Image (cartoon, rainbow, N blue to C red; front, side, top):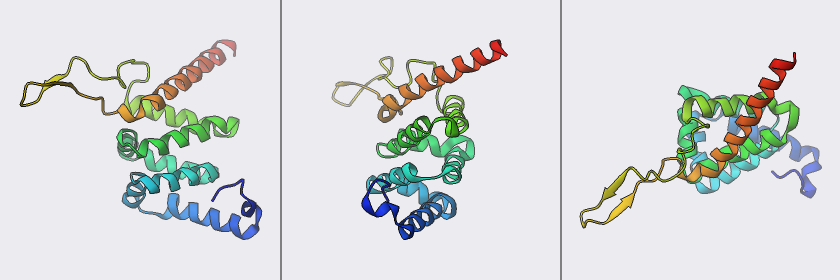
Length: 174
């Protein structure tokens, strides 16, 4: 499915890749796609598909993760393999330039409004105030549910700050 391989320029491969990505993002059931994203090998397949996807396919995937007040997005962000899928999506949208600006803004705002406040600094660290003791008296610190996504959420925070500063700049200069 990679674009930079020798076979990626053949017409048959391009048609197959597009059909495969459509089936995965558009016609696949919600539960099936979620289980693929949460699987180690499946998440790699979804990441490769996201890298090769067109605007329509990206939009379908974003609509999928936004369903039910971003419950699926939350599940992916808290999962040890699923968070890589979201990281690939954010990188694709961020590197895609102007044609993906609206999708990037929509995805970042969905994370900010439904998952966690990106301006808060405590969403990805250990919660020191939540000390627990096991049966033997040993202390341990509870991890944040977003422990696997801490670098991704930091990247989202930086993007959110850029988006907000551009919005303020455009608002005052127009």
